[in-house]
Image (tube, rainbow, N blue to C red; front, side, top):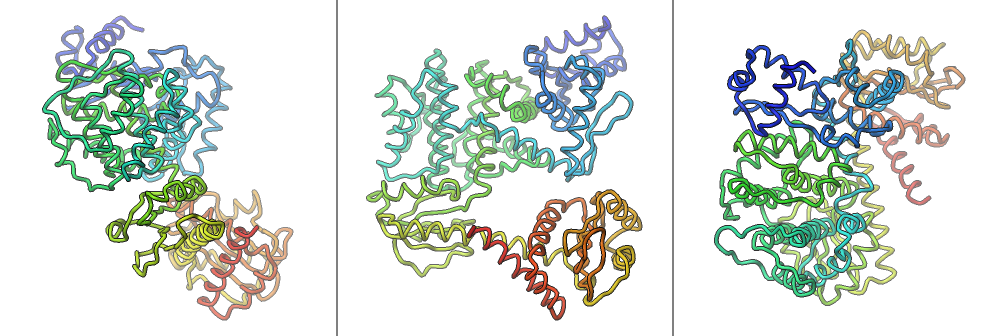
Length: 634
């Protein structure tokens, strides 16, 4: 490292805050141009983080520089590092620096890059090389999709922040299952309900507070004392009495927000929080917006925003007083959720830009906890049916109805429990309502299932059947939407006859181009795909290019009057597919569905017997439904 470079780096790292470039250059005895040249080098150093803001620039040592022993020593670790720095942080990487940092051979790194390229190809993102430089390239939407996928993978590991088993490993000195049971008992005793993820989030924050007190770190109660709701107060009192701890008012208020936001489904009313720093409301909104626009992570929900804005409020008060809390999960988060930690670093950068306060790694890790918990919940509930329970006697028959939550945790996300239907009239996005009382009330798109108070064997069978019916309906809705979007009447042909597969390709490609669905390179790309691996599948052919670069995603359908030899098959239907790069997921689902349906001879014959385009579409949807029902019954 050159003498000036070393001098500038030491100066910037020692400041631990934003500095004015002109003043920094003067302090280091170099010109502004020289200073900026070194800044460019620092930006490309995988062990440094360089941030620019209204208050100047800031350089900090990334975790990898601070913890050299954690340099990745296998492909998975190197892959994660390259994705974090090159994709998430948006940097240009340098091969020579990566070789030096990883301490691997050129061939090893080259093989790593090939594997990463294969993985990200389905997103239409490239890991491009230009000389010594590596960078991720693609259009904005594709890069966002890949970024979101990588972030979700980071939070979908065996080291979940919201797993009781992992929490026990993180807090070995505390009896996590017992503390969780105390919380549940107090919630149930006071006729409240919390879904499992909110409960685990509350447990996590309580464990952190208990750990802090065990280590002599107790947040100072700032401001006037506020009334805490009965359930939160009871939970805190039970834990305090059982384990000899004392929770601060700040901690109790945080617990109350987590409990009440989810238990009552309150609105997004930040103004009701009595914040010490009202400006954090706008700061929080800008953070939520930045995370969505940059990383495709949607945190615009009261379940995240209300506790997070209060955390920001208390954090700013601590920073003003020069107080920083130790975070017992810092090492765990940086080791097992490094991308989530990087997101928190970007949030900390926004906070520093707007407030001028620098943040410790522990404070950044607390932000990562808020972000990571919400992402984990999103991942886990994505494939589940959003469900509410309506039971006037819920709390009398709690032990019986609790079985629903345990028995169907893989299929149902129990959002809340109500004692009357009036309470849920304003609730949106419900898939299933399980009730112990009859009702004629209609809730848009929600299925209502009445069961007995005691959850009999018949009730269980009815719940299982209803779950399967709703899931099948959802899949068919997606199929119907996809069919209506991609099949075109002006690309539908019945009773066509061709002598060769090339003649068929010429005819269908010409009409696709004439109708404006594809560009002039489409046919050439399709023929290249056929030369590499023909697209015949028994009695159907699905010709398509490797690249998804068409103007629109469409399917041209040709029902043949006689079988056509296509490679080794006798084809009776041709589905020629053109895919826009935004619709590769639709293509994959449709591709699989067509092969499944048309592999059955009777289904194929049924499609060929259609009278016109509308009849064909209806018959195709019928076969999708039949195929789906077959999967459910098998």
